[in-house]
Image 1 (cartoon, rainbow, N blue to C red):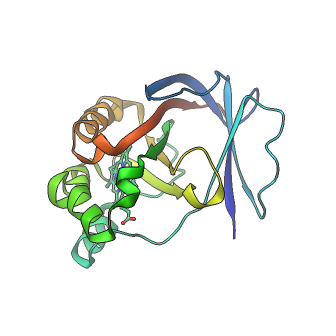
Image 2 (spheres, protein in one colour):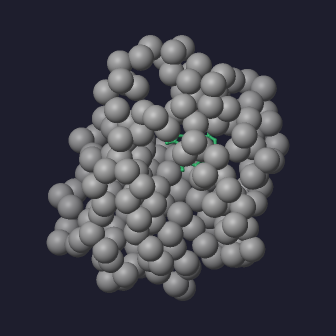
Length: 182
Ligand code: HEM
């Protein structure tokens, strides 16, 4: 399994512009973010913070949504996408006590997470990392890349999602904004 390790410290390819706690405890301030793959889970090094996640299969996406997403989504690493957001999220016990079909109802039927977000593609490129089952402080690390001219659009998107029923189950969320350093 390949883990992706996000390290907040004094070096890395991204400058940290801001670290804002949306709900729950924040993370220590740091000037840079480094992202590296790792074959194993090492002990966190002596840095302000380190978060680890893994890419995984989709849980909620239905076939028609998968086709729609695949047809419009952009990949990571575009030259013009010099801005990024790393938003670690933990959901509550009440979320995890629901069954898969109950969670899907909240996630899409009620909150329209996919339907409402699709129109932000391909401007916003995204990658979801899972970390609930590897002993991490968050359940998900969400990563987004976009061009500076799409920064306002990204604010609209996070505003819409945070007002949904799905977000009533979010008990910890930290919003880290970045600009490419190299
Ligand atoms: C750019 C537009 C976005 C699109 C198209 C999108 C789409 C999706 C999709 C399809 C999934 C489900 C994956 C699965 O089936 O397992 C998902 C999950 C998730 N997204 Fe988004 N998303 C977007 C933006 C965001 C933003 C801005 C945030 C955070 C502020 C976010 C947070 C999450 C989280 C935490 C999950 C995992 C939910 C769970 O499994 O309980 N997404 N997203």
